[in-house]
Amino acid sequence: MSQVLEEVLLANQAYAENFDKGQLAIPPARRFTILTCMDARLDPAKFAGLVEGDAHIIRNAGGRASDDAIRSLVISYKLLGTREWFVIHHSDCGMETFTDQTIRNLLANSLKTAKLDENGWHDIGEGSGSTEGEFIDWLTIDDQAKSVYADVKRIRFHRLVPREISIYGYIYDVKTGKLIEVPEATEIGKAS
Ligand code: ZN
Image (cartoon, rainbow, N blue to C red; front, side, top):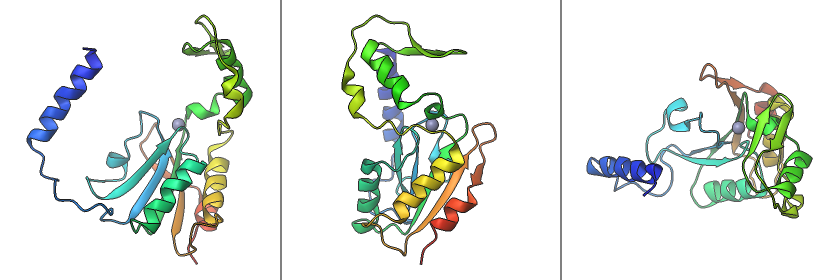
């Protein structure tokens, strides 16, 4: 058994031993949702003070308002009653380190893990790769405040999202653990 697999199963055994959350309802009790990056340094339960059953957390690379994130947001309000949504990107995000063309080239060259150094990303493993990466919009990020604004705006004006939902835009600072508002995003995301 891999070390990770063993550790996860052991941790779960300990968690389940004192588990007392078996009676929670499906709808999140505090009726809100966080869309954020999958970055391992971000722990929304800790930085936003959540316990099991409180809120929906939707995560992807960058915390972007992709079609699939919007699918989850629509289910979040339409079937499960959330009323407030946070879009939270973060400082030092990996999505700022490459462009669509960078990852497409890397993937076309090799499927092994690439390496980032002062000259950017490059492949260190052997081929062969695949050109399937050409068909994916990787939703990379130039500027966190701009990406938060763009995503809040896309969600705000999506035809399946009702006006009464409040959408807030924030950047999580990985150095301090603080949430910093992107005021223009929150402004465009406000309910009406
Ligand atoms: Zn990130």
